[in-house]
Amino acid sequence: MDALLHRLLTLVESRWPLQCASIQPIKVRENAVYAVHLRDGSKVVLRVHRCGYHCDEALQSERTWMQALEEYGIEVPRHVLSNGGRSFERSHIQGFEGERQVDVFHWIAGQQLGSVEQGVAAEDVADIYRKVGRLAARLHNQSSAWNAPGGFLRHAWDAEGLAGERPFWGRFWELEALTGSQRQLLIELRQSLWRDLNAFGFGSDRYGLIHADLVPENILVDGDSLQVIDFDDAGYGWHLFEIATSLYFIRRDSIYVQAREAVIEGYRQQRMLPDEHLELLPMFLAARGTTYLGWVHTRAGEPAAAEMTPALIEMATAAAEDYLSA
Image 1 (spheres, rainbow, N blue to C red):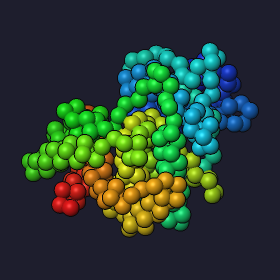
Image 2 (tube, rainbow, N blue to C red):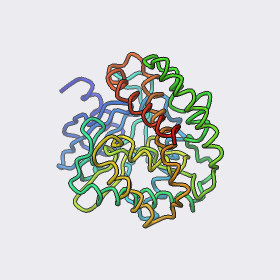
Image 3 (cartoon, one colour):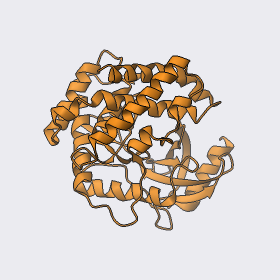
Image 4 (cartoon, rainbow, N blue to C red):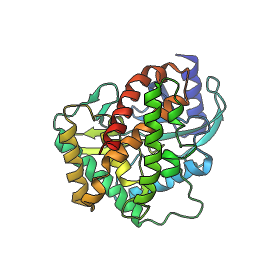
């Protein structure tokens, strides 16, 4: 077994009431996520958090909201508490830079709806995306009515976080790979986003706690059921930003129009979405595109970011043009 994987297994067995048999990577990107096979034949998920993304209070707040969602009747990933009764532990792990927050989740059955690289794997696109829309609406219904406890702390996908001087995921207009005309387009986009996002406002009918990462790889499909995972990016934001995120990576796919109509239909089955709000969807698609450019900009030199940059620029500039020309 690889030395790093062995160290991770040792960590799990020493900090959690689990007897481990083997471990394999699931996704090693921002967070490093692994499937841990237990000696009784079951599995759990190990997540090693990226360094410095969340403080302990923010990470504990993630669990607080997930518990509230579960009490509301929405299925969410469930933590396996450590030997100390905590939802996460801190550890220095050889092979990872810095001290890391580490947590373990119960395994969830199902297959990913898709991925950025391979697209959506659903046979019935309309049915799946209606379910995605209903799920998003239920999340927003819960968060709109929920009073977060004292000390609750999560980041914000607000005007400052999307189009301010220091956007949450990075100064996207400074991405080195941009051409001069692309950079100018994004500077114009940023100015328009700042104006229009603030004008739209922050009422509870349009803004609140959102998952913020309803991409296909974070949606598990198991027969007729659908469950969202990975609340790492959850924070305060516009409900339309949630919907835009669920559609962003299929904008150029043949299924886009069908998926968009279905997700809106499903959402409206659970929560009001006025036409005048929906008209702003191009703005939120454009805003979502800038975040991915900020993401690769802050990871200059990383092979994965370099590989994704040309496609992300193409998608983001197309979304920007659609919004600015409307």
